[in-house]
Length: 137
Image: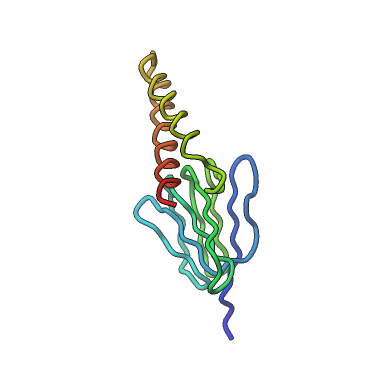
C-alpha cells in the first residue's frame, strides 16, 4: 500500500507552527491555490497572503492557518512553507482586525516617506486579507 502521508512543516520567523505528517495541504500560491498530497511533483513557489488548510489524515478535519506570504518548497515526500507571518485562523478576531485596519488607514494620512508608505500599504494588504479570511470562515 502506498504511503498517503507526507512530511509537512509550516515555519514563521517567530516559531515552527507545524512539523508532522499530513494527508493534504492547500497553499495560497501567487499564481493560484495549490493542493499538495504525497507524491506531488517538485515545486518551489511564492505564497500570497491567505489561508493554508491542513488535513492530517484521510477524511480528517481541516486546520486553517493564515499566512502573510512567503515561499513553499514541495517534493514527493515533503512540503515546507516558510511564512512571513503565520497565525491560526481561529486566533484572529474580526473586530480586532477591523480596528487595526482603521488605525492603519488613519496612519496612511500622515505618511512622509516612500518607505513608510510601502510598509503601511503592505500591512494594510495583509490585515485586509486576514479580515477577509476570518469573515469567510
